[in-house]
Length: 125
Image (cartoon, rainbow, N blue to C red):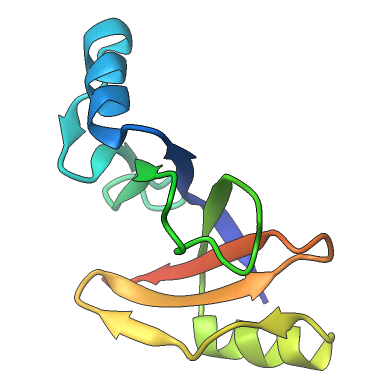
């Protein structure tokens, strides 16, 4: 069973997300949007299938990364999220919430062994 198939996103806390986004747009050329920047790429196994990786600055007071005390969170792309969560439970991994489904994918949050919050994402389509 495949588990992680790639990085879906990198999220980090900062004092002023809008200014950080503008700085990265101006100085590094990121094509920014209201959520940060989205990088598109093509799957290596299916060269016509598009994938994305999201880059998003969050306000430093966000509680979205809790219970982790870190200023970042990584989102990993996965296949078959339901099955993976079953396996992770058997392996004693802390599952923080129920799987949620949106029009762009399914999500769940876990903790790694050091208490870092990790977001798992199964894209739809």
